[in-house]
Image 1 (spheres, one colour):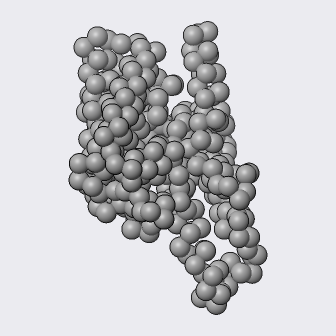
Image 2 (image 1 turned 30 degrees about the vertical axis):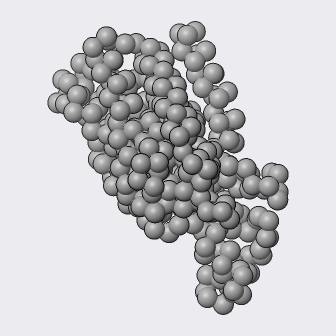
Length: 348
C-alpha cells in the first residue's frame, strides 16, 4: 500500500508541474499579445478574437503577434524535445541540436538552397521571404543529417567518449559555419541579407503556412517520442540492460536522431538558429521531476515553449522600440549552462 501511495504521489507531482507550466504558457501568451511597440489592452484582444476589433488591432494580432506566439511555442517544444531525446540516445548531458552541430548543418543546407535555387531572399524594403519552403526544408534536413551521421560514424568506429562526441559536434559546427561563410561570399546583396538575417534566429518571419508545417512535424515527432518513452527509459539504464529488455538499440538511436534532425531542420529553415533551448530545458526539467521519459518528454516540450515565448517577449521589449532576435538572448542564457555542465562532467 505504501508503494502505491508513493507512486501516486510521484505521478501527481509531475502532473501538477505540467499543469502549472500550461497555466504559465497561457498567461505568457496573453502577455505577449498585449505588450510591444503597439501596446494593447485585454479588452482589445478579446474584441479581436470575436471579430469586433478595429482593423489595425486585428492586423497586429492575427498577422503579427499570433503567428509569432505560435512560432515560439512550436519551436520551443521541438528543440526541447529534440534535446531531451538526443541526450538519452547519445548518453551525453551536453548533447543538443546546437552543440552537436545539427543546427549549423541545417543552416548550411538552407543557405545552399537559397543560392542554388533562389528560393529565399530579401526585398529592397527589407522583407525576408521564402519562395519554396519545401525545398529549403529538404536541404536543411540534408545538412542536418550530414552532421548527425559524421558524429555517429565517428562514435561507432572510434568508440568515442561522450565528451569526445561533443568535441566532434563542435568541429562539425565549425566546418558548417565555414561552408556557410563561403556560400555567403558568392551570394548577391539580397541573398546575403537573407542568409545573415536567418543566422540570428528570429520568430517574426514565418507566416501561417510555415507554422502549419512546423506544427505537423512537431506533433508527429512528439507522438513518436512519447510512444518510444519506455525504450528511452531502458537506454538510460545502459546498453546491455536495454538489449535484455528487447530494445533494438541501434534502430532506436538511428530513428531518434533522424526525427530530431528533422525537427531541428524545419525550425532552422523557417526561423534561423536558436541556440541552447534543447540543452537548457531538459536539464531544468530533470531537476524538478527526474529523468523518467514518460514525463520528461511532454514536460520538456511545455517548458521549452514557455522559455522561448518568454525569451521572445523580452527580446521584443527590453530595448523597445528595437527588437532583438531571440537567438541572441537564448545564446546568452545557454552558454553559462553549457559551461556549468561541462565543469560538472569533468568533476565526476
